[in-house]
Length: 173
Image (tube, rainbow, N blue to C red; front, side, top):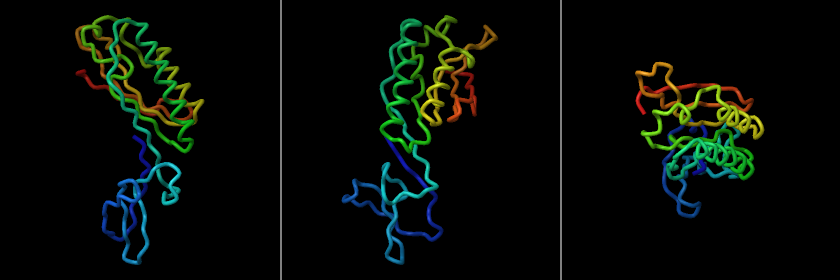
């Protein structure tokens, strides 16, 4: 799913669906002009201040061992590169929750199935963002240093310089 959004005009236009443009919402302004608040990449009706976001969607992977995590990391990095190649103006690529380590809660009790924010896998996500000049949102099941507590279900945002801009931890998977 690819969206390009921008700030809405200051006046309050009518919003309607227009099948001639692929079903996008089109704003019909009082002065007779038209604009599109969400348009596909390359649209002539997009604003320079808009943000192009690619939200990747696919089934939660089945993870049985550390090698499956490596396969997912490979696929995620490839998805970042191919998405940016296909949509060179993309600003942000969002991967689904559980996309790195799946949703097999039984394996989250094994340290080798959990990641740390400074793990090589996260370094690969950082490198993918830097190489492709794009921000990325990634999901990971992160080791909790308190063994009596469950792992963190974490989300990270990596900027286009490969730096972690945000690190969010949920306490419950």
